[in-house]
Image: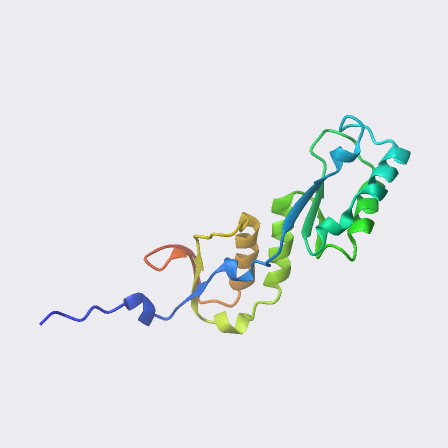
Length: 168
């Protein structure tokens, strides 16, 4: 008679933490302010204000929006403020920066909701493979969040982990 196959990983005291579980669903959009500038470089206030007022901001309804400028233009702060004021009440979230910065901010906010009691004195594996965009900054934030409470922290999958921290 053949020996029964036992899944040792499933029976272990390891706890998985998957950052993808904290990925807020919703459309991501990048607004490049250079499109509102002459030749992508010069902000002419009257023309800029006209373009901002003519833009159909409702297209960003419930989006997570990142505001940036892809050119070497010197953009005054008020220009970003003006666009932000149009998106307030339309978009779910507006941030200054690129899409990676947007994701970092969204994860930082989501990680504030983590119930650390679930991980207290546990051996935790932070899943390494993801199908959704998880910036490296989210892994750093998670490490700083979990280290004070866990017994050990590892990265990867149960069959192949990289030790990060082990309480002495």
